[in-house]
Length: 279
Image 1 (cartoon, one colour):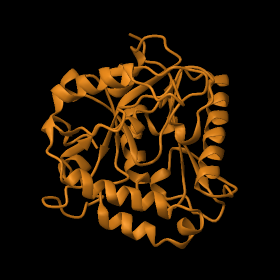
Image 2 (cartoon, one colour):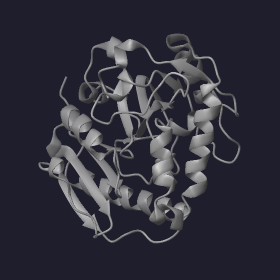
Image 3 (cartoon, one colour):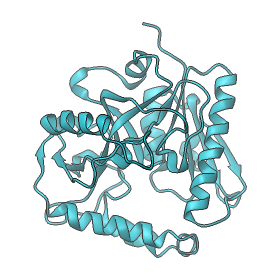
Image 4 (cartoon, one colour):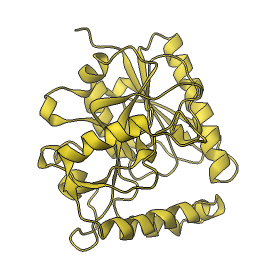
């Protein structure tokens, strides 16, 4: 099988997850296939970005809703240019999101994606990794996250069409592709770590630029999710992911038929040890 030419894009502003993103996708795709856009020309490019394609762009202006839409349009245009240059696939994720192939399959990410059916976009099943307050301490960013976090909320919001195979337009936050259906690839997951540490959430909630941009409500919502999910019993991963993949494939919100939903039902699964060294 010929491995496809796969690029990965992210856009960041003072994001602590970026080094983990570069390390992970650099190992999967090669650092020369990573495109990092810094939201604001006042930022400095870290040394660990050496070997990637980086660019400082004018800061997106507006509140959280407006800037998310601007970012999605921006990365959609960047992806279009990459396709014009010969790319076969483009991945777009936030710096705290990681597309992971189930280690039980014994397949690397690039090979897995290269073998997918010829759909215009592909999703991993969304896993929102949240801190279990009773048993898990503050996260250490220098160690693998999944050695420190063991529970995932199988949340349809993060079943995002992160992989596209032709020029398309992502909606706000890349949670959908406009005018296209989504396809959840069996064995592929999108691990989201934005709520993996309560103390870190409190730190960024106090960031004046985030407060000014209207992020306070979003961060408080994540903090409430940690508290709520910590109270739920974690079920069996292999049983639940099959159920949730089927449910999200069949169930769509009335207002957005090209997005998955579980209609408010919450399923938490214990992440198997086989994932612990990946991210």
